[in-house]
Amino acid sequence: MKAKRISRTVMFIFLGVFSLLVFYAIFNTGNPNSMFRLVIKDTSYDLAITVGLGLVVGALVILITLTRGESGLSHLLEINTEYIHKLRRKGRTDVEIADSFLSEMGSKGGLLHGLAKRRVLRYLSKL
Image 1 (cartoon, rainbow, N blue to C red):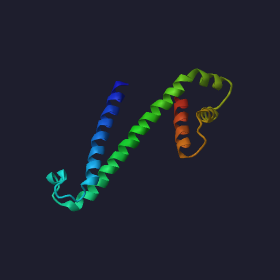
Image 2: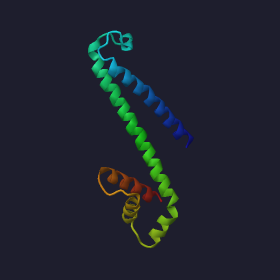
Image 3: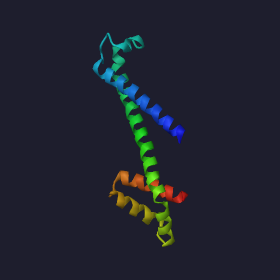
Image 4: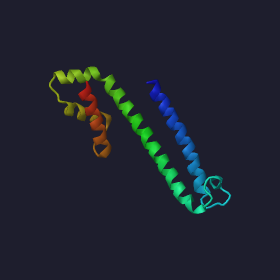
């Protein structure tokens, strides 16, 4: 648990650093006096550097979001473990339990619903 918290903190620090670099790169693309000239002398690479930094920021945001969503969903399922066992004793399948859980959360359909359903089913199979 502590290692997870440290890794999330490191990811947030990287996100902050790369966000600042993207912000600087956006407003200094093509500037001959940019701090990027210390590393890359040619200004023709500025746009590629800016896009690359933007992709890194996007990937970090997705990574942070995915790790947060999984722990929150798992936490909700852990809270309801007794109720899940009760439903299983009544003969409900994992798919029915997952659909019921997601409908109570307000998830109606779509790509995110499908991803969440797979996570719930994965958790239920471990129970």
